[in-house]
Length: 364
Image (tube, rainbow, N blue to C red; front, top):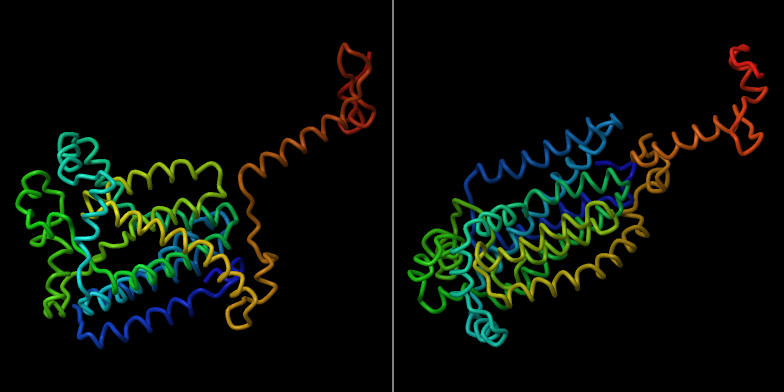
């Protein structure tokens, strides 16, 4: 990968995580169509080739960061799917009753919120778009962090997604849930109010219920099947945390991910309590990843060679702001060299400047 700016080898960590997750996945009897496997092979392969090619050209180095994001986040996504499907097969008791009680205690009414969204089509369109950016944001974040020379931040971001997915899968294993309208037997009402609400017939709910019933082991599609805690909420907070040091972009990302969180109860079919659970996962993940990253940097197994880790082999590329600052400094030095002050009325050429210009400038 981009070993000349990364301090930690992430690829063996992700490969080991996917391999470990595949064991309970296969033991639970799951299998899937071949084209799904090809997607997870093609994504990392294309990302790897793009990194190797683009990293040689400093002017397009930011695209190498995006390719790195595709490579790593594909493995993180595969790890998440394998662990969550394996957790669903455990068939622990549903906790919808407790989540519904918590939502009512907080004053949240899913019927009122669904009707409000249905009466504002522009809001619903924004929710659909923002909710779908959960897969593309990590690629953009990778490119931006490389452009800002914050590769260690990207390392932490990748690790945070892996840790967050693992934590989510463990909680889901112990406390599975569906949706409020499914639990209450009101899916027909939900479909009449707002077709975007997921129901058993056309969404992840059908996959989850089949797995819990003992069938559905041959997967024709792969999708998120976790209700509590909401990984969309976890991901939204991790996205904002990742770009926080880049002052010019954190505000747009914060707004985008706030909209995504608002869309989660509707497009994702979550309880509000699911969002709280996802936020707790993110808040616990961030300090844990900070410590984990420091530990990996001190590890002989995962630390990159010092010549790479200390940044000496960075490509000769600097942010635009730095280039402009150097140009201004050069201009100011040239002006001080060519002119000397004589009074408050202005400047006259110095002797050095007259010599440099071949006598073209003459004093009175």
